[in-house]
Image (cartoon, rainbow, N blue to C red; front, side, top):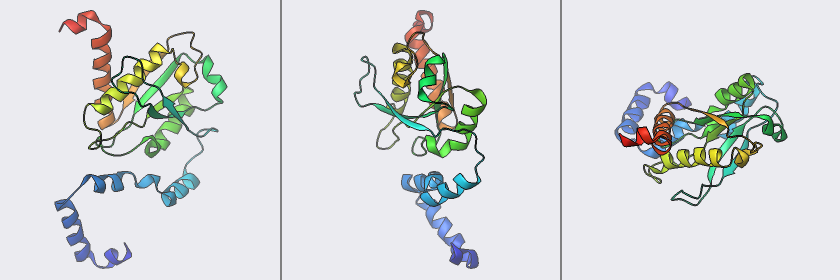
Length: 198
């Protein structure tokens, strides 16, 4: 990097070569750079302290109606002990962006920590499997399966009481926004006879 700061023409040539042969690995390295140990260390020092509790990785079993069997990995952002989840009846289901090929929930720590602290709600952010190793509609089916598991288990799959069906807010940014909208359409198609007719 220091060399390219001095040799600007060589840097420009290098950038043109990379852009000419851009691969999925280039995108992953660029977009996931915030999760490298060095940058994570500095982010941890500079980031405001939004929550007292770190995010927790959870595995959510697929519902019986799913075509897939392996669990879905997600990160739970909640500013409190897990025992307190049983008092909640609402949660946010977040789908991160990343061009369908990169970025997991930990790349969005700043946003998710702030949401968890300010809303007081549990936030479940999906670490869905990425293309091209898992082509469409794999990620979409993961999102729908997690929503179905949350509704069928009444939230027990993440530690909620299981007494009431939780109200779920689905959010997403960029590619995650696309998946959030498509998941919402799948939910409507599967739960509303009037919608299914069209």
